[in-house]
Image (cartoon, rainbow, N blue to C red; front, side, top):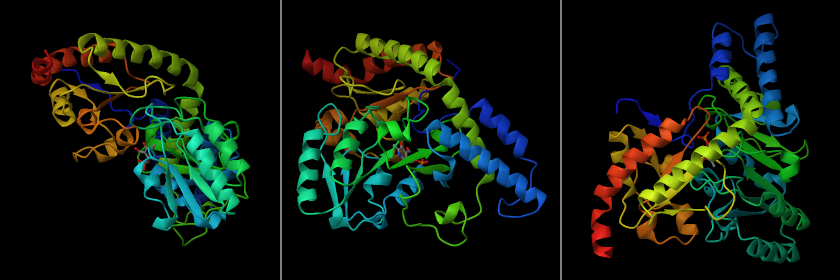
Length: 384
Ligand code: PLP
């Protein structure tokens, strides 16, 4: 088959046509948004229009959106003890950019366990928050909205209620959720929320930290000029920000129809995988997930071999987290869920998006029939 099928949207999404059109409109423009002349003011207007579009996607006020160089930097900016929080609690399935702990000292960082279904353990969190409240320790808690590997949706509202009752603050990494499910900062109860342009159909290298209100003010990491209200110095990435805004507006406009369409495609994909390999396990499928993500494995499967096999068959997929693909290391997400290492080693992630079609799903399944026959022969033989 000569056509390729792209099923790695959680790694990065193709540019949305609306973002490409916005980029084409600004590509001839010159002007630093901080300059007072007409060219500078025009650039400023573009940045502020995009800020309003990004804010609208998450129900925030535009002035509480800080543009960064991506989701990674937004998470690093948010993880600031200067918020008045002296302890960082994070779920075991957070993205590495959160797991790195930002500016918290190593011994001020604690893990919150997750259930075998890949959802943060609310009882464990409640118990730990109670202890910290008794010690008068004010925590920052980081729980993502949708996991990048499994797609599991976390009970963020319930987490927020527990965190606020204990006097803490909540960071929600919504990088993989925005544009896929409703993501309103107030409804979620987030104090800080992070986004990435390229996961939404914008460009790589741009993201945002969104604050509930002015009072939540992390200490800047990138310092220098007073851009972004002192939260992030450096001349703004105008094309990246414009594309991010356009992608956010398009994702917002298409949210409901895309959700329904992707859920149907994913159901067809998973039914096909299970029909071909009944021994396959789909991680996190017992609870709510974003509609575009499937992470599966089967006994005896080696993800790196499967990814190469899919690639040769014309299908782009990834093994576990894309940020760490290329390196063969077990997924910390599946480890936190208690998945045996041998099964975790075979985890393959298939992720869809707005331009995915039934033909892509059929392409994957055709490839999987052939690959499963070859890759699982030995383990099936042993099991038989
Ligand atoms: N958070 C999550 C959940 C992600 O999946 C990613 C990227 O994979 C990031 C943060 C980092 O975003 P960026 O690639 O824009 O740095």
